Amino acid sequence: MNRLQKKYQDKVIPIFQKEMGIKNPLAVPRVEKVVFNVGIGDISLDKGALVKAKDALKAITGQKALVCPAKKAIADYKTRKGVPVGLKVTLRKKRMYQFMDKLFSVVLPRVRDFQGVKRSAFDKQANYTLGLKEQIIFPEVDYDKIDRVRGMEISFLISTKDKKKALRLLELLGMPFEKEIERKSK
Image (cartoon, rainbow, N blue to C red; front, side, top):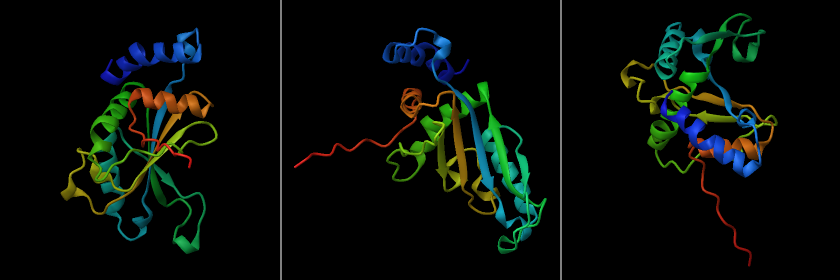
């Protein structure tokens, strides 16, 4: 059991049970999986872009990426049906907790002028999506081996449908949210 998983078991579950009045510890919300999505739209121009993007994603996640082909042809984007347009990786259990611990404590604080992640990035199912503009903020990515800076989307799928509980869970796990500015009425 790694550090964040131990924190969830020892601290987050009891706090949640006390705050929300949950009696069964298995009813406490949890992060079920973390999904990475990376778009590789320039694949038609550079055939090596797919391999380089896969290598960078494997270095970040420690897991092989799944290639996502285009479902239909779109002439404006110069894509044909079946041509790879993205990569996807799903992390669960031990790898998920290891990645989240690294993201919260090492990677996000390395971002220049980092003020915290937005609190409003929850969808209707209370899942949180974090967009990153560049993959070079991860220490595993070798700056000399990347062909271009790529953005990525990291989605945290949470077992509750309540946004307040999902926000509280991520706060307790250590996600660095932006500080709420207290508005003073005049």
